[in-house]
Structure formats: structure tokens, C-alpha cells
Image (cartoon, rainbow, N blue to C red):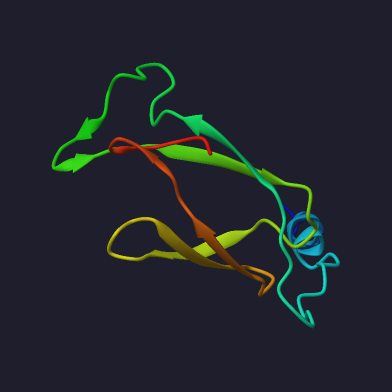
Length: 119
């Protein structure tokens, strides 16, 4: 391979890598809703129960861990979503979370026996 062709190939590879990176980075930097609020707002959250393993919904034990339940959460509020930091109180009923955009969520979880309900 000639040196000029090799150099051009490197530049092309670098340009393609930069283009691919921009396709990933630009959406991540897209406008997020403002998170500075004058007061707390309430919103309705819809919860749909999910299984840990769709192919085997009766499977609940994973070594020493027991899957108690999971919920897929939806809300119409532009402030809702992207929660990556969550904490439960010792009773497991009070949840506090912070989103990637900086908004906070406080919720009370309902249980049906030992499993999360779809309240």
C-alpha cells in the first residue's frame, strides 16, 4: 500500500469515527426540560408490572437474590424520566429519585402482599 493511500485511509477512518461519535453525542446534548421549578408539581404515573424474564415469568430466584417485582413507569410530564439514582426507605414504600436532568421524584409504592402492585 502506498503511503499517500494509507494516510488518506487514516483520515477517512478518523472522519467516519467523528461522524459516528456525533450521531451519539448530539442527541445526548439535545434540549432537556428545565428543572428549576418554583414549587413541587404532581403528575399521574402509570405503572405496568413486568417480569424479570419474559420467557420464564415464574422464575423469581437468581442465586441468593429474589426478584420481588418490577414496574415500567410512564407519565405525561416532561419532567418525568431518566431516573438513575433511586433510594428506598427501610420499609420499601417511600421512593426518592433524581433524574439525569436534575429533577426529583418522590413516590409511595403500594404492595399486594410481598409484590409491588400496579397502583
